Length: 90
Image 1: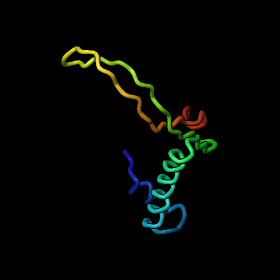
Image 2: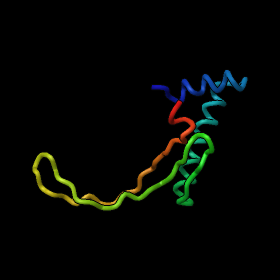
Image 3: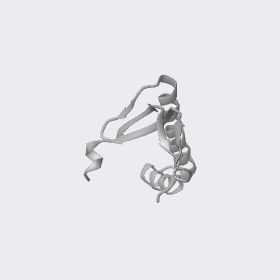
């Protein structure tokens, strides 16, 4: 698995900047995407990469596997990403 540290090293090399600056840019970008999806409840479309959005999962009934009882699962908001077909099939 690749984390922000590894990504920031690569970005820093490719952009001739420091790893600290690259890490800050990556973190700021990710924070901005999440806050925009929360604030405006809209899709963030990055052409050629994918779509980020906040979706509401409806309430549903489920079964507790230990007790076998039916329980109510409340609705919740999920953050989802759908990859562009350009990167799905590479």
